[in-house]
Image 1 (cartoon, rainbow, N blue to C red):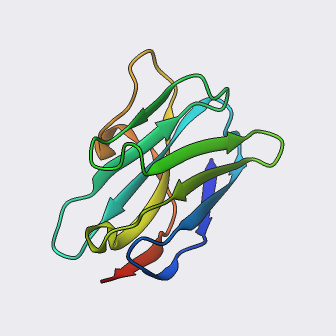
Image 2: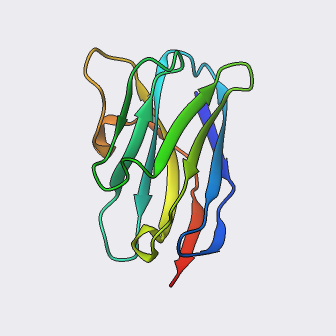
Length: 124
């Protein structure tokens, strides 16, 4: 069983920055960690994924160059550093864990555990 708790969301002006955290507990080291976001009325959207070793990282095209995912294995925490935020980045951001496989998980259906989410609102 894996438990995930996100924090760090909030209200920020366009161009600003936020750092989200995902505190993981349970047997997390056999899982791949990911961040998704979901805006009202829209489907859950992949943002980024990382293995605990930090070797395998993928980003959605919409966030490349602005968002960085990282993992601190000693703290059991995954981070999402978001810079140059835009109003279209407004969404609930969710941390997720997927069973490790050779295929990098890029869709929500591939993830087994989810946190409750943290709201990010970017004002124009």
